[in-house]
Length: 468
Image (cartoon, rainbow, N blue to C red; front, top):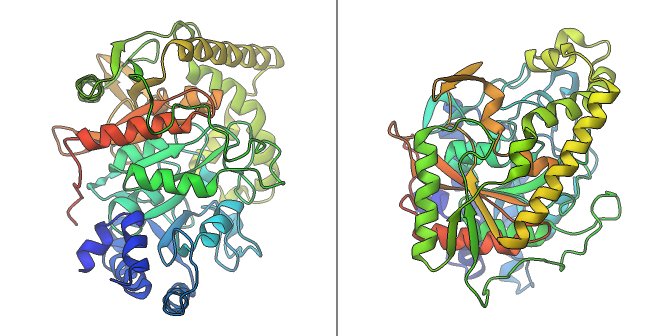
């Protein structure tokens, strides 16, 4: 029974609890036991939330009393340690914030609790959420549950590892360039980065540059992403980017009245991609075509004109360095190597910054034109499967690229604010998960959730878990 509970998704757990076939206490205890057994190998969970079992007992009592309950009633969830959690350590992966306990919950945490979810634990991240691997001076490095010698990604790598390893059914993550989707691909789980502003960033740090930061759910199944998104989206009156009503959706919905138009690519200016990753994307395209979608290979000229990684770095360095200098002033000896590297980068000139902003506008225009002709874009999540720890560079197709190249396929949707979803669809020759990414036009979350659900039903790797 315990094995069933730690491998069940949040939707099923909620149904079992509501039907009183299992208690919330049993579910929470099963996940706590899993954390105790497995976390020493992975270091995905950095703080247990006090009172989770008490909250589970209260949830069971409410059911027994016939109280009307929310859709996540009694279900545990976890949150990346960048999310404020009232009364629970939120240390942001840095000794500078060691011992920090917020008084209030981030909006997204509060919404999960309002739906009946029980905060179970906080998960690891790189210092300040800024890198493609989850490692820091305060809480150390997270390992991938499929191979502990490999990264679980960044910056939400603790969250992805916890869900993949059965320590949590559902979690909250944040994304600047790759940090929701990439870690999910590295560990074989699912994740959604909604349209920018859909989920308020209130109570999540850092916020610079907030026009690029996104919050999103991470889960074992697409239906859990859809459930969590329905609970998390919508304005909160505090985040000035979160202004669109939750009910508004520009997508096709769950039952489109015509075949969905899917374009797919593995390059189109994004640089070299691992052959097994490319083959997995093509396999997903073939599966969708076999299921009745209109599918064709595409190129996007805007991606070929302006390199998204280059645009990101020129814009990002200019905007984030002042915030980093402010928070680290007087604490330079407590900084991890990634932050030191960022601060050591040369400042972007005003001219280059403006040119980068104009390039980002061209990317938006290019995607706007693309989504006039197609409903969905299918492409890699990451350019390689999960890599070894502390990888500085790697070689693809005879080209040596910087480690940050792994995010060349995710950065375009962070810069433009488009919604994008990551899900597993393959396995590498050495047994690592391989994901595919689906993107749609702004506020069309229902489109990618619908296609992802279809693709999930066709997946050759459903219900596969790491052996630990």
